[in-house]
Image (cartoon, rainbow, N blue to C red; front, top):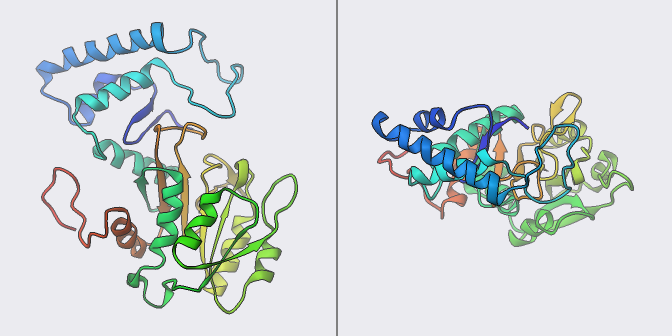
Length: 291
């Protein structure tokens, strides 16, 4: 992944001096910037000596564990940098992270949430909103999903009173075939949610075309596959919605965290409302505007 991604908790910032980031993100007056920079340099030094592995990470050579955080001194300094701004919830850094992820995926928008599991729940729940008119999902509608997968890909279907229709996967890729999904489509099929398991992309391009032709929503569970591509396009860019996880087991981490990415402006309001306690307006923290 790129080297300048951060969320509610900043995790990865490379090649950009901490002082420059502090100023860019609205730090204190210039006369206090030097002391801030000294704090961050001290934190990075402490992390290097007492918190993190002494071995230097060498791309292409160093071992990267299949699960667990991989942090460097500037990552720990970035955590403190965020705290010095006093932002304990989402704020300007989160908004920047959302824009960067959306740009990385080539989609219009992305919304930060507290986990990949919550991202899946939010994506499915938003499709039940009356704001979507005749396209909203109602109780008893069918949602096709693979029989093998993470529980929180399946659970949101049940939590919303929808009926899961299970399709098999192929050995080796653990991904469903588009033909299997097409055969499972019935009169009440309204959506498909499927994960790119362990970073192995299924044929999301063909599936997206099938779903569009049938008027069916497609949700890509992209939690395992940030950075994967299919036919030159990023996974997570084919569906109506896609989800990401930033738990330490995944490609980049915010500690806890997830995201829903989407293209249609019509999805923003229901997504924000479901995420933010059902509010009909959206009032960002520390701001007095309504949109």
